[in-house]
Image (cartoon, rainbow, N blue to C red; front, side, top):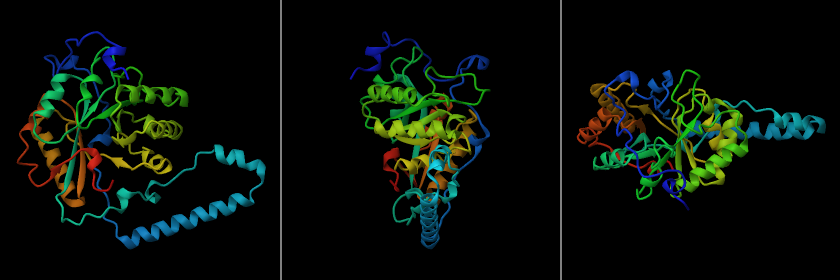
Length: 321
């Protein structure tokens, strides 16, 4: 399998090593901002009885639908199949929903740094001395070596560009759009598999529009399943349908709890990280997403004491997987 540098680019260029630049107005926007990024997501501590009752109700509904379909005229079958069924996300029960934290083990925290694309960023993250999930942008002319530098890591993710809101102006090359055909989406996923042969997990870069769209997400999950990828929902929209398609394609549902650096401010980032730690202590794990801003990396470097009561993990070590 060819690496990114063999297929796309010359030797490494002098690309920015962090997002901070002297003139803030010239700073590129690598991630769209939505109000959803300010929200913190915690799982409800549901009892086993509640979950069993929910499962009974769901199974009963499934049987009713099957019985109704048997009795429907043949001419209605095609139109019924073509309609996208509206599913209440709360009615979907996944292994994440059934996980119960017994507090006998140390709570886990998965810190994900998105938009990694340079050797300098990689080296700084590795120097932290504890597990941090690096999510690499696919190679482009602006960051040609992002796939090559990921290869020797024990674990890495792919930060997959997907359609953002119209106000976002920093669109990556080959960003997936809701109008893309399945063939287009599959070709892109196959390309990612060639670039990142050892990666399993991918999360959305931007994607507030894409992750809300049933047809687009159905096509995406179908392609991800084919090439052995698992989707992690960055939750840039509260209307994301990722849970629905994780269930449909038999994948685990993984979703972030906090974004730590919506503001590039040391105290703010540190407080967001503390919040992620508290979530982990409450439910047994948390997923915190940030970016390789200079200040974010400084907070992570200074936060070993803050993380003493939790165990930093890679995404594939989540306790409910």
